Each structure stands twice: as C-alpha cells, then as structure tokens.
Amino acid sequence: MSPVGLLSRLVSAVTDARRASLIRIIIGIDAVLRGAEAREIMLKVSAPTALQLPIFDWLRVPAQPWLDLFIGAWVLLAAAFAVGWRTRWAGFALFAVMFASLFFDQQTFSNHLHFISIIVLLLSLAGAGARYSVDARMGRGALVIPEWPLTLLKIQLSLLYFFGSLSKINAVYLSGVVLESNLKDSSLISLPPELRTLEVCAILSVISVVADMALAFGLWLRRFRMATAVAGIVFHFMMVALLTSNLAGQLSMFAVACIALYLLFFPTRAPSPRILAETQARNPSVALRA
Amino acid sequence: MTPESSQKLTARQRAAVVFFVVFLAIQIVVPACKLFGSRPERFGWQMYAGAKAPSTVNLIREDGTEKTVPVSFYLGNYRSDLDLIEALPPFLCAKDRRTKTVRLNFLYSEPLEFPCHR
Image (tube, rainbow over all chains, first blue to last red; front, side, top):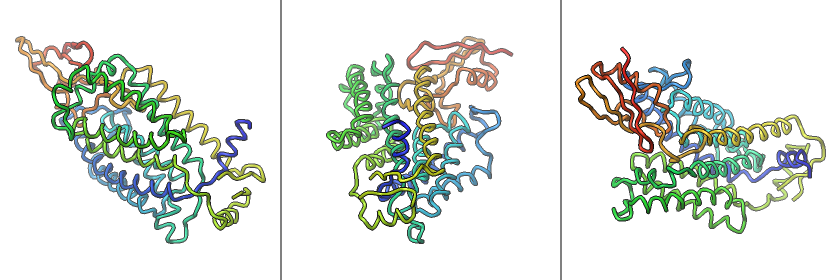
C-alpha cells in the first residue's frame, strides 16, 4: 500500500471511545492540579526581586489580577475537559492556555506541562468527550471516535521515551553524577549511603537509558506489551520515589499522564453491529466492516 | 477496526492527513535538533539529561571577600535547563554594588567568571 493509501486508511479508522474518554478524565484532573501549581510558580517567577527570563520580549507572566484570571480560566477549562462538557472546545482552549504558559518565561516551562498540553490537544481532536461525559449525557456523545489522534498520542509517548533515552546518552549523565546529585535523604525511598555511590549511580543511569528506549518500542510489540507496561509503571514509581522530594508532585503527575496512555496500546473488543450501523449512519462516506 | 473507503477522502479527512504529517514532523524534528545543543534543552524531552544552569554563584568583592549563594535564591523557579549565562551576571552586579566579579559554578563543568562593568 502506498504512503498516501496508508494515511487515507489511518484517518478513516474509528475506535471505541471508552479508552480515550477514561484518559480524558485522568488528564483533565491532572491539568486542574497543574493549574494550581502553575499559579504558585508564576507568582514566584514574577516577584519583583526575582530574576526574570522571558523568552520573548512581548510575552511575560501576566500581572495581577490577570494572572488569577488566566489561572482561573485554566482550572475551569481543565474541569470542563475532565467532566466532558463542551469537551472539544474546552480542550482546544485548555491546550492554548497551557501551551502559551510554556513561553511566559524560561522558568515556567515544564516537560510535564508540555506533554499534557499535547495530550489535551490530541484527545480534543479525537472527540474524547464521547463517553463518560456531560456531553454524552446531553446527547452529544458517540460510541466510536476517530482513531488517528490516538495513534498520534501513542507515537508521541514513544517519542518522549525515545528522545528521553537518546538525550541521556552523554558522558555527564552516564557517569552517574546527575542521578547522584538528585538522590536525596528526603526522597520517599532513600538508598543507603553505600548504594549512593557514583559507581552505583552510573549503573542506574545506564539502566534508565535502556529502560527509556525499551518503553519507546516495547509497547508496540504485542508479545512484550504487558511486560513493558508493568516495567513502565515500576520505572515511573522508582523515579518518583528515589529523586528529590520537592519534585515528587510533578514527577507523580508526569507518571500518571504517561501510564494513562498505556491504555491506548491495549486493544478493545470490536464494536458491535449496532455501533457500526450507527457510525455508518453518521458517516456515510465510509463503509465499515465488522 | 478499519473502514474501507467507498469514496474519496472528505475535506475533514484530508485536513486530518495534513495535520498528522505536520504534527509528526514537528514532534520528531524539534527534539532531534535539540540533541545538538547543550543538555538539557527545552522541548527536547531531555528530562534529567544534564544540568546547564549554574548551581551556585560566588560574589567576589573589591576587598577580596567572597560570598557563595545558591542560584535558586535569585529565581522564582530554578530549573537545570535555564540559560543563565547572559542574564545572571549583570543581574547580580546590579543587585550587589559591592560585587567586582561574579563566578558561576556549574555541577558538571568548569566555573565561569564575569567582571561587573560599572
């Protein structure tokens, strides 16, 4: 099949809406919590005595009361997205708000925020308000949704792990100094001093590079999928537990976002004839086979 | 489940194809380019890949005395991917008029010194 044919087939495919809707709820709650945290960060960043590092001269952390209005909009949009009210538009607006905040200042950037903003965008494109939502209750739901945004989400997760691994292949990281400086007594799990050596951290660094790369590809392989998902959950848990406690909140939310997407890699039952008939009625341009 | 197209793609589906390709291109090209910069870079998924920002500063005064301060003291939110070399020295010089030289100390590389120009 030609690439054009493959892409055509890709954008025509539909899938059960339940997984994406579940993920929507998780990510929506994540975004609400992240909004509250963003306010604290932005207040500190914009304090008069602090050094500000704007990325663009014309874009800064909003001054009060605009900051509270901005965060208020963020939290309300995230809540609307989570409960699935006007999901698509709430999602697009939430994406715009979160993505814009990445550029207010170098200090307001966060990989987690970058990631969940992309997840929100793709879930909105997919129509993830189709199930388990206010929209569904009010007759705006659907049993199946386009699959292509969810395929992009799966690829995005794999790219995150892939580049996360590649970027760690450097002399500094592999020497163990980065991990050693981030292992603290105040972490949830504190390694005993005899295990907190540079040599042990170097071994852990190599393991983390291999783990990241395995996660990038393992979820796509049916034979290794479950084992990879379990390994991913353990990997994220260890990161949250071992690294500095003041980052535990962010790392936890990041872990939740990544793990939620694992659901997409596990197939659901084929839609029933009723679903297929309903979908055909709504989309006469495609013919569905059970 | 994959449908068989009985007709050509609709305008919406053609837009989806364009979005798919453009989105994927951006999500691959941007992080790939960031691999050529110093670790870690923003938008490159380079979590914990290194530490570009200095961790402490030494404020060296005219009389030779030195004061060591964590960089996080001057920031609202310290991150290891901050580009501080241009902005931090003049900020510190302006903040403490007695400072003659600012030394930025990095976790994984040699320190850098910047004289205060007044």
